[in-house]
Structure formats: structure tokens, C-alpha cells
Amino acid sequence: SHHIRVAALTALCSVIEKLLSSNDLDDGQIKMRDNLLKILREHVHDETGFIRQHCLQLWTSLVIEKKVPVTQYLEVFELGLARLIDIDCVVRKDAVTLVMHMILNNPYFDFDSTRAELEKAQNDAETKLAKLRQEFEKLHKIMEEKKPQSDDEDSGAEDKNIDDNNEMNVDNNQKKEIEENKESYEDQSFQVMSNCFEIQEQAIQQEEIIAFYKDSLRFMDLIEQANRHVVNLFNSSTVADCKEAIHFFVNLHHYRLILPNIEQNLRSMFILIRSVDKSICEAITQAFVKIYFDVGPTVPLA
Image 1: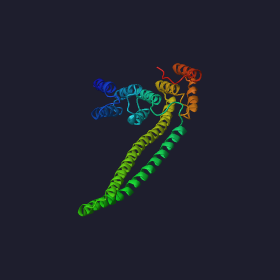
Image 2 (image 1 turned 90 degrees about the vertical axis):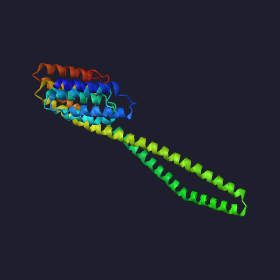
Image 3 (image 1 turned 45 degrees about the vertical axis):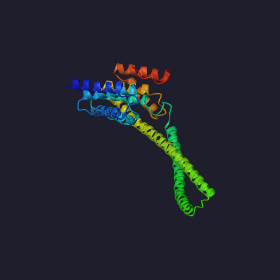
Image 4 (image 1 turned 180 degrees about the vertical axis):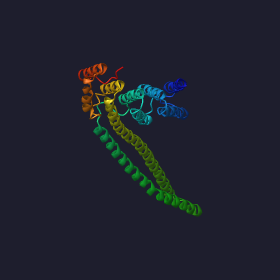
């Protein structure tokens, strides 16, 4: 039964929201969470439209509650993107809702961010990473150069000790100097190794930052694709498609810097005021008021 499957998927989603969404999960819990999320992703492609629709609703709930791991955010967005051209109207409607909320709740940037800012931040991080790698190679080379000296000193010290023991004529000052040099080398080696580990940690952090900015730019590209699909819904013969597309652009109209074609899309939307459907005309009128007279931050409409 479709209803039993929906109930099972809803239960899985509830487990994720209530038990497997904290930041301090152990490896076993993370694996369980990822397995449950995989099941939810797979059912977005279910052969039954009712199941696809419900899965999109569950994903929207997870997004609003900020329960979707950042590492899986783009993959989930692509799921919604693919369903924007679903054959079932109700599925398309919930796909638009999911995509909209993923943009509004995205972990990558605010509504006033620009691609140029993200690209500059990525370039800065890459430059810093290159410098860290150069510094690491420099320190590593110093350690390699120090190794033969250490071996020679140790060998010389051992030979000297043997000679002194055999001849019973130990030069205490020279022995002390050898020990001091050895300790000095060990201290220097420890400091160099410590610096290497610190640089490695910083490099790993920079790599994560770079990956984050790459994902941010990729997310912008996906938003552009979603934007084109939603615009096409204005030409749909289904009233629900038109209304959902209007809802989408009303809630995202503050994202003008991210959606460079949004002004053109809004003009295409306002042409619908000529629609013979009274409900669409009313939706366009409300959209006009919301966009041009409400200057507050973006808040999803109910």
C-alpha cells in the first residue's frame, strides 16, 4: 500500500530529525543517518507520484529544520531540480517548494552575496594554501638536511666514547659539547616537526574552505538551472504550476544578485495579469505588492 510506504518514510524522517541530527554523532550514528537519508533520496525517484510527492515534502521539512548535512546539500538540491519537470503536477509543486526553501536556508551564502565575492574568497584561500605548502616543503627540506648531520654527530660521539674508554683519557669538555649539540639538534628537530604539523592542519582547513566555496559556486549554477525550469511553469496550462512559480519568485525576489535574470523573469510573471483565470490575476496582484512595497527580508509565504 502507498500509505504504508509513506508512513514508513515519515517514520524514517522523524528518526533523522529527532535522533540523528546533532553535531556530536558517533561513526555508527552517522552511518545510520546516511543510510536513512539514502533511502529518502531513492524514493524521490519512486515510480508512484504519490510517493515522490511525499518524499519531497519530507525533504522540505528536513531543510527547514536544518537537518540536511552540508555534505549532501547539493545532492538533495539536484533531486528537487530533477523533479521540477516531473510528469505529475503535484510533484512539480512540491519540487518548487523544496528548491525554494533550499535556496532560502542554504548554508553557503546570504541573499546579498555575489558570485564575484565567492570567487575572490576562493582565490584568496587557494593563494594561502599554496603559501602553506611552500612553507611545509621548506621545513621538510630542513629536516632532511639535518638527518645526516645527526647521524654523523652520533657516530662521532660513539667513536669518541670508545676511544676514551680504551685509553681512559676522556675529554669531559668535548663530551659535554657533543651532548649539548645533540640536545640542541633534538630541540630544533622537535620545533621543526611541530611547525610542520601545524602547517598541515592549516592546509587541511584551507582545503575544506576551498571545497566549501566551490560548492557555493556550484550551488549558484544549480540555482540558475532551477530558475529556468520554474520560469517555464509560467507557460504551463495548469493553474497550480503558475501559482507555484509565482510563489517561488515572490519569496526569492531579494536574491537579485544571485539570480541575474530575475527582473526579466518577474516581467514574464506580471504578464500573467492578463490571464483569464481570476485566481492567477489575484496572485499576480499580491505578488506585485509583496515585491515592490514590502522591503523587509525574505520570509517564505505560508
